[in-house]
Image (tube, rainbow, N blue to C red; front, side, top):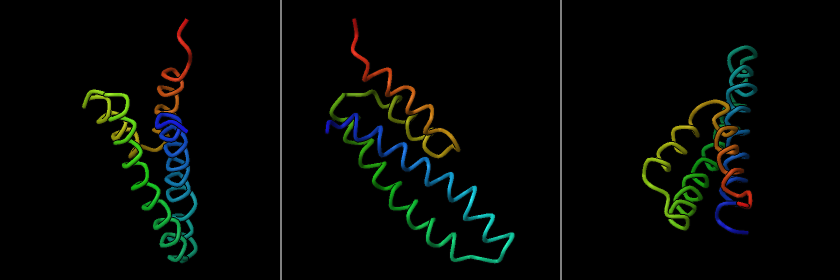
Length: 98
């Protein structure tokens, strides 16, 4: 699996974990007094975010992205639904050019 495909996959999974943390675990903690939900999902999301950062670095190195592009990918990763924009940009990069 090449670095761009791996980064695309990791970005998507990390984005879903962020949505799970914000949309499921946090409401469980505050509405139903279940703080363990945030601990578990938060730990999973944290680990996936670290994998995302490593994958971002490897993809940027392999494809010689400018720092501005890497920074954009990072900023999008901390926004809810930012992974959709990352996915869209990577899909365009992976399409064969005619």
